[in-house]
Length: 223
Image (cartoon, rainbow, N blue to C red; front, side, top):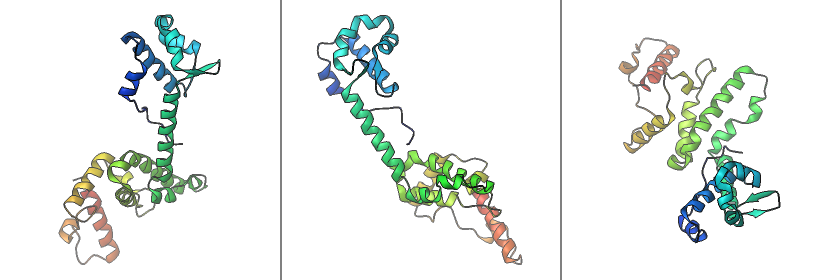
């Protein structure tokens, strides 16, 4: 299950219509009890309400308890429960469908393997995946998959993902840079390299030339 965001939908007009006859004090206590329900896994006891409202409990409970269903032990507001369930379904579906390419590359089964290096790489990929999740709606799956694929490329010794080798790596700023490059119709993720950029001598062996180009490429990411 994905981590729950600390929020739920609030409908001002519905709330106003449902609290006609309540003064501002009672409305404030009502909101407090809704927050208590949210933070108490969707239900609370009368004693929990008493502790939460303190001295205000006796002044408002007789009115407010009518806004909550009860099984004689717990109390819950039906509308809030539905909103909480709706939000959780959304978060769960997003987690299940988020960036399929990432999910297929980073399963929990890999973590259980006995290979320490593979475990390390898998955890690095999972970490980047989790960092990208909040940006799905803003950038879309295709864009994030492209970003993820580039930054999870392994180094030559296959011990670290590319993003782990950077001195700095703020996901939000990196994504924004990629977006700007795309709008400029420049090839992603960064510019191509000339021999001058890479400081590579033509007479170097092919294998060393590629290593030098890669080093220059990586350095450019932090320019």
